[in-house]
Every structure is written in C-alpha cells, then in structure tokens.
Image 1 (spheres, rainbow, N blue to C red):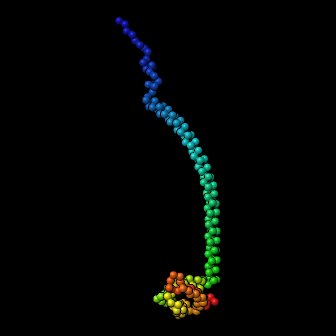
Image 2: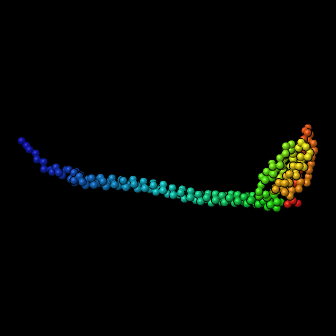
Image 3: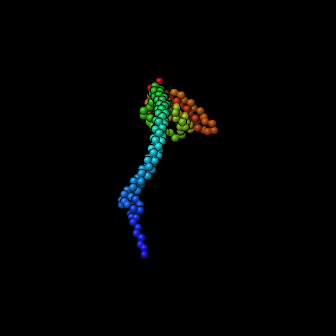
Length: 198
C-alpha cells in the first residue's frame, strides 16, 4: 500500500482576495463606486453649467429687450399723454373763451329762467295761449308767439306782464297781430328788450 503525501500547501493556492478579509474588498468596491459616481456627477454638473450659461444669456437678452420696450413704451405713453393734455388744454381754452363771450354779452344769468316762466304762468288768460317763448341773453331779450281769441287780450296780457317783478323795466317794442289761416284765432308775435340791454 502506498500512500501519497502532498506537501504542497493548500493555502498557497488561495486567491489573493481570499487572503484578505472581506472589509478591504468592500472598501475597494466602495472606492470604485465613488469614482463612477464622481464621473457621472462631473458630467451632470458640466451639463447643468452649460444650461445655466444658456439661461443666463437668454435672461440678459430678455432684460435688454424689456428695457428697450419700456423705453419705447414710455416714450409712446408720454407722447400720448402730452397730446391728450394739449387737446384738453385747447378744449378748455375754447370753453373759457365761450364763457367770456357769454358774460360779455350779458347772457350769464345766475338765477335762471324759472322766474320768467312763473311770471308767464301767473298772467294766464282764457282765450290766449303761447306757442313759443324765446328768452335770450340771460332773459334780457324776450320773444313771445301765440294765439288769442280776441285782439284786446294781447295788449292786456303784455300790460299784466309788466307788473311782474322779473319783467319790470322790459319794453315790449315789436307787436305783430294777424288772423291765423283756417282759424278764427289771431296769431301774435311780441318781442321785448329789457332796459338793462338798452
């Protein structure tokens, strides 16, 4: 019987990985993973930097365009507002000139015409009616048109109007009386000028 003895050490054939404990192997794997992660992070950072530069350039361009548009728009708005102000100033000048003209002609009546109409109403006669009343220059010029059934009613109406305070000093100077067509009534026209106007 033969026996073989192998003198070759089994531990000598073990790989280098098995010779070391598992902690260094895990450390090497971790270092490799960190290197790979660093490479990917660096590539991603470069990509993000490129995007940031592009966005920064776009922002700067848009800011310049906004400034130009704001400057142009402000100029347009200022021009528009200046034109509007000029238009309003000219309209104001026309209105002021009109008011000066009205006051110069004495047509500025601060009390209105209600007292005139009250005076006309208080002197009402049956058989006499007014079809037109023309008050001009603040009530200093008066024009009356109407119809009467009898010719004597018109002078009596004018005489009674003179008793009204608002018509005091009014000179009824033009008087026209004629028979109306297709009617038995008489058409009349009376005009008057206040003594203040004369």
